[in-house]
Structures are given as structure tokens and as C-alpha cells.
Amino acid sequence: MARAQFEEKLLFEERPILVSGVVSLEVFPGPPKYESIKSGDVREEAWILTSAKAERFHLVILDDEVEKFATLSRCLGKMVQVKGMAWEAHTGHHRTPFLITVYSIEAEHKKAP
Image 1 (cartoon, rainbow, N blue to C red):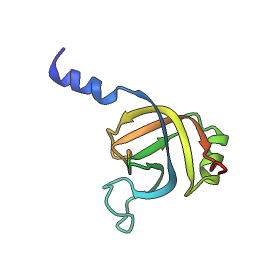
Image 2: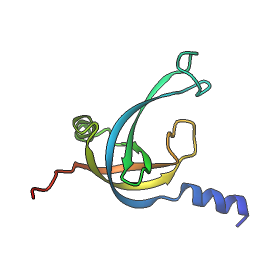
Image 3: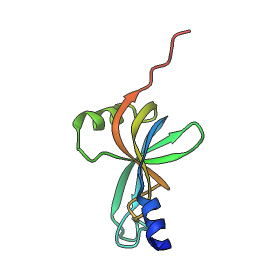
Image 4: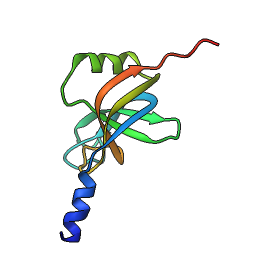
């Protein structure tokens, strides 16, 4: 296998992940230049999970499941636990170095002392 093909395979390889963090809904400039909404780029929103280690993940929900979006909205600014597949960004629409295709998302409840 040629080096470029090997590197491409690694780039798109998915890995299972279970991570906790704070959910945010962030706005980014989109096409055509991905530079400035004020200068005419399309406004794009992305759900972002920030872990305790300050790792940021762009959350991707492929099945358009209403309950997942409801949980994200309800937990905005709060801790959640996400289970899914992590993979590396490879387009301008990917807002963090790694993304997670979300299989499940649950609010984390503080444990009573």
C-alpha cells in the first residue's frame, strides 16, 4: 500500500469513545471562504463538547434523532456523557480536530454527598 493511501486510511479510521464534558452550541463562518460571517460567509452552527482536559469535539448526529437534539438543547452549558465513534476532521465544515458521531448522549447528574 502506498504511503498516501496508508495515511488516508488512518485519517478516516473511526474509534469508539466514551467522553464527558460541557456542551456548547457555537457559530462559525461557513462557505464560501470560511473566514467571516460579516463578510458574507454562511453562518454555521456546531454542537461542541469540551472535556475536563480541554479537548474539544464537534458532535455529529447522523440519524436526526429528535431526542439527541433535545438532550443537547436541554444540557447547553452543562455536563453530558457522549458515547460514539471518534474520527479526524477533514473538511472545512469540521470545527475541531476530532469529531464524534453520537450514538448516545446523557445528562450527567451530580452525585449526592
